[in-house]
Image 1 (cartoon, rainbow, N blue to C red):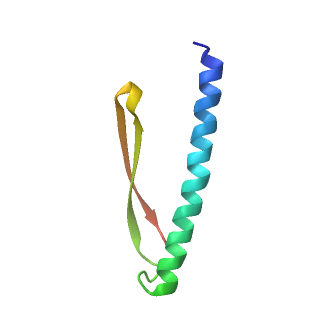
Image 2 (cartoon, helix red, strand yellow):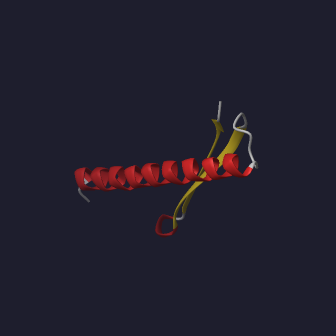
Length: 68
């Protein structure tokens, strides 16, 4: 195993996750505010799961996103 190759592959994957997740969250929040589902002052609970079946790895990250 090449540690440098592994590190770069993980960073590339996490960058993709971060960018696409941010875009999806922003879109969903904007749509919810526009439709009246949210008023734009909420704090949203957030859960992210990372799963790698070949490693039998499941990791859950919990947090909050404040809209104001």
